[in-house]
Each structure stands twice: as structure tokens, then as C-alpha cells.
Length: 259
View 1 (cartoon, rainbow, N blue to C red):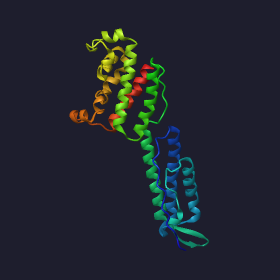
View 2: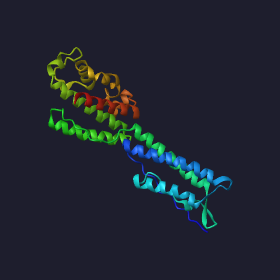
View 3: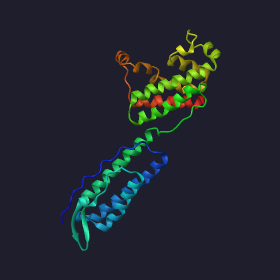
View 4: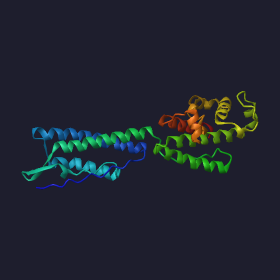
């Protein structure tokens, strides 16, 4: 019997999953691991797997395709067909097991990535006094998350730094007398002229609940230098996923503590 070798569909890179989706994915992962052991045992010395023994595996892949479209290449047992014997097909175990191993590796990668990456969510900034600024922050927050998912680290840092600066400026202007009286306040009386580092120092001095911001703020204090390539070259700034993650973490912390 001749066989045609179908090229598997290319797996689609998914956005980070919700905790519930990860739980479902982990269940399928464990199921595939169990089926791999059963198939390895059933193949024995012949290194062939009987077609009926593949029914659970096919069902597992089908369920995965329905729940997570495009996550895995389509499973096509005919790629591994050997011959027909005693009324049912026999398939090469090496190819079948290899497909399962590839699926397991893919699921591991997606689960790890999703657990370390923020899930896109909508966040309100009702505590911001300026209505126009509030809309800008809500828009930018959604964009920051999309940039993170796309691994655009520079965009994440610049937008996060801008959002943090806007939030702190808005809140400090609501308490401008104490802000100017702070021991860490610069001589410039116009708060809108303060840079992010100065805003952070004063805000932390006024609100102890923001202490965590000061410890992490090295990742965003010089964010404005990233806007212009010349500044980036002169300052020798180095940034990547870790700096972007911290920048977003600071933004979330500021939002939580000041909302």
C-alpha cells in the first residue's frame, strides 16, 4: 500500500494563556505522557503499533486542536504506516512516538512562556483626575501588553516609563504643597518639569507603600534616553526582557497602590 507523506501544518505562536487554559493544557500534557508510555510498551520488539491502539492518541490530538486551534501540527498517522496485518494497519512506533514527543515539547514551551508573560487585560485608571490623560493611560496599557507579547522590549520600557511618569505627576499635583516640601523635591517648582527619577523619589517619600518602586526603578529611570537613538548610543543603555518585565511590574505596582 502506497502512502503519501503530508506536510504537517505549521504551528501558530499563541498569545499567553489564562490560568484556566494553562490548567487544561497541563491535563492534556499529562495525558500525552501517559499515552506515550502505553504506546512504547505496546510496540514491543516489533517496533510497530496496531491501529486500534492509536485511537486514544488521535482523540487527544483532535481535542487539542478544537480547544487550541493551530497550537500543534495536525497528527496524521498515515505518515507512519507500515503495512496491514490481521485486518488492521500497523504503524512505525518511532514516528508515532516522535510526534508525541514533539507535541509534549511544544506544550511545555507554551506553558512556560504563558506563566512568565502577562496576559492581556483591560485596566482602568479611574483614580486619574485628568479625563484625557486617563484615556491615554488605558490605551497605552493595552499597547504595552501587546508589545510585551511581541517581545518589543524597548517599546514596553518607553511606554511603561511614560505611564508611570504620568500617574505619579497626576497624583503629586493633587498634593502639590507636600510634593514641593519634600526633602527629595528638586528646586524646580513646576512639577511637570520634574523627570521620572525625581517624581519617584518624591512619591516614595510621601507614600511608603511605593517603596518597592524605588528598589526596581533603575529599569525605567532613564527610559526617555531610549526615545532618541543618539541618547541610547551615548548612554550605552542595555535592555531586554528582564528590564521590560520590571518596567511593567513597576507600572502595575504603582497602579495598584495609588488606585
